[in-house]
Amino acid sequence: MNGGPLARIQDAFGWDGFPHALFYHARYALRFELDNDAQGAPVQLIRAMDRARLIASDAFAESVTLTAVISYYSDRKTARRVSAAFDRLAKIGFRESLRGSDRVPRNDEDHIAAFGVDLYRCWHGADFDKSDDAMTALLWAALTRDLSITPSTRCFSVHIVDFARKIVVHPYDDRGLDVVAPDRQTLRPLYERRNDWLLDHDRKAMDATFG
Image 1 (cartoon, rainbow, N blue to C red):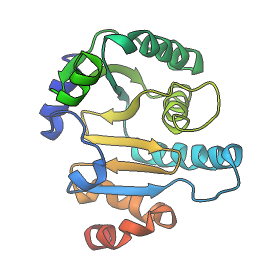
Image 2 (cartoon, rainbow, N blue to C red):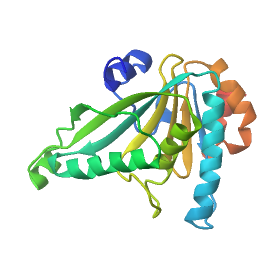
Image 3 (tube, rainbow, N blue to C red):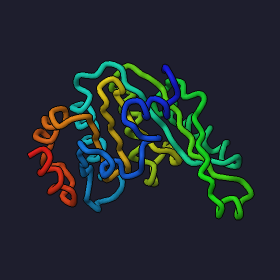
């Protein structure tokens, strides 16, 4: 991977890291509902994984090399937990090296007062050749972070990126997923093909852009 993840995000998207609620920060974005059923975690996860895999496959249909961007909040006391999460990610099936990181201090006075150290947002990146196994592992890590299902990495956020084409897929939990692209033309086929899965809460805005 050439350059740290933050420099690459800045160059491709103009952001200092990927913002929270990515959909609301991008001009061209889609927000999908992965599951809204309360049948229980196993059924919910299976449906969410099926949808997420299909959406990611559509979004990256013309991509060759992708980048996994992993981010999390950490201080010195959480280093062991993060290392264990990376080990679990490798066991799940994503074995590319995520060594090194960009660390951004939050300058959180409340956290410093309570714990004696500042909190950092840490960013790791790893390029990988597009494959079903790697994609499934990353989606599993993202979708299980809030569920009582193992194995789970628990502590970090996952963005899957084609930096060359400026496309981001961000499954933010087991219920939803955002896709960002540089222009309307790139996302419109996905908008049309998976229209039934768009999140109704934001459908009006998406229809205005892509309809």
